[in-house]
Image (cartoon, rainbow, N blue to C red; front, side):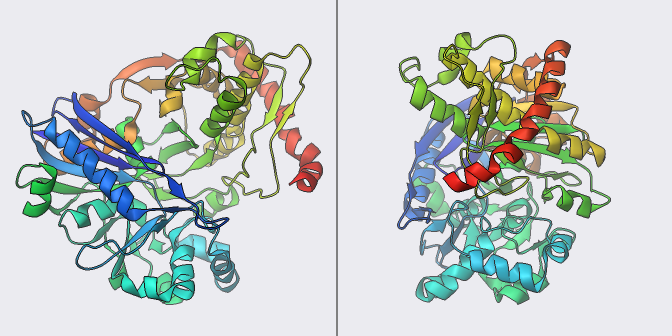
Length: 497
């Protein structure tokens, strides 16, 4: 019997089935577009996304008939909630974290409760990207749409509900709403009262890796699944990615390099949570009990895509893979360029709305390979101070595991090892979110007796990138210069933006 992992992202969804010995039997992928009905708005067409999710499940199920699916689990983006009826009908679009609506409610929460008091309850940095401001905006500005929904479910939880299970919400996804009490591992009564959103409009909070129910006979017939497939509660994609890359104990961290690059360290409970607040860091449940994670992210993959489209369209392969095409153009030694990677305003660990990108040190002899390497170097230096702060708080990050599309680049991973001075490990399967979801399905249904057994079966190392001491020393000097870019240019950048 095989295990089905599902991952729902901002621009695409994937399903993959794995045998119990870790072999990938089949996979399917579909893309969809972000809708922008107005300037500053960003939504997913919920009907279209659910159609694409069903297509990936059906395609994968059809290819695994010799080893049929016995259990499934979903990983997904956070924040975006789907309005649904009790009859499992989709009642509207999902508003994304990129959407600007709801700022006034964040300000009201900041004024009435304060960031520190809020953080003690729900350790997130207040911002418009979360689900709560979107729900309050919808209730005030489109009350008919709000009242038409019996429930609001995050995408990972939406899968189980639409397949016939009772409405539940994975605890790691619940934390992306600003309505969650981390200590109680449940919805926060003070925040529900403040917002006026009842528990009956949300799913019951359940820990990732627990059983949610069984796929209904009608849904199984529609998708070509066998009868009795068990549905397992999943989680936030970054948390599933941690499991799917083998980050299952304190002291390791995932570096997920996609459109956004996200560093996700795993650790035991923090003794002084407010020290995390002072560093602009959140705290969230891992999908494994007893572990927590934080997210530090920037637009690393987006910058490389910008470089590819702007400077290297002639050298990319047919699938647009910039890594193999341009690695040979990058110099071996660290560059003498400094790049401020704020091409989009940074959010974590510090939101700087009026910043912009800078490339400093260009000469007429500068090559595009140097520019690309400088982008990779400096978007990595962006994380250095946050990593140091974590270590000062006792959160060790002596080993990084790379995942996502950017993990294909040997040069980029070597840069990261040299900058941080610690090894970077690339697993054979770098799409950790869908793999982690399948592993959760196996744990919950008794295929594996422990997370360690699941990792031993599913996660294999492709290559380890070890730091070069001489280059690490150069990057330490470069870090001192990098820290000066924003203070030296911020006044000009404010005028430009």
